[in-house]
Image 1 (cartoon, one colour):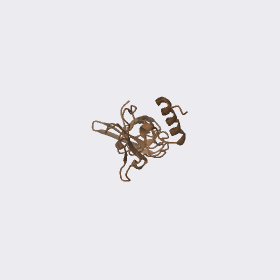
Image 2 (image 1 turned 60 degrees about the vertical axis):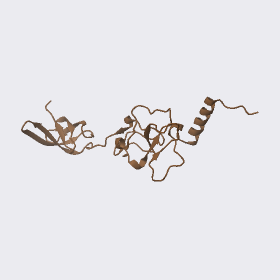
Image 3 (image 1 turned 180 degrees about the vertical axis):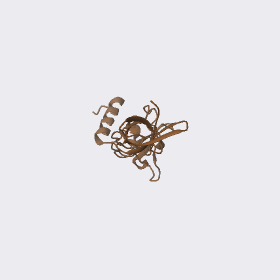
Image 4 (image 1 turned 90 degrees about the horizontal axis):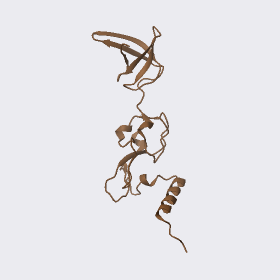
Length: 178
């Protein structure tokens, strides 16, 4: 005589089987009837609309630029809620850089991505000091990489003095009086 599994024992067994076979967790599974031109993956649920998150469709390695082709959108099953600070829109990830390995079928936390560097470490950049009508420019070497808006340290090529400045959108550095 076969004894029926309790609901919690059945769920534990299904989760173990899913993990062993490499399947995605039940809260982010692919639908079997996804059309080829449809980028969003829908999960069958009792509610028509669920929370939507983005997950990698392949392994994304640290330092790799995240492209839309490497992502897929999934709708969570009813009753499942996304954790705080995970990517939900492609615009949040497009062109960003992975800070750590992102695995298929897993959430992409906001802490695992960064902006692309606008200036690389060791690059020659123009440094500007602007105060009223006075503008002083010099050439410097960056001591650390940075994205637009980041505070970075640079070394003035002529004097050897180390300055801190903000990376501007055009790749120059703006320093202020200290």
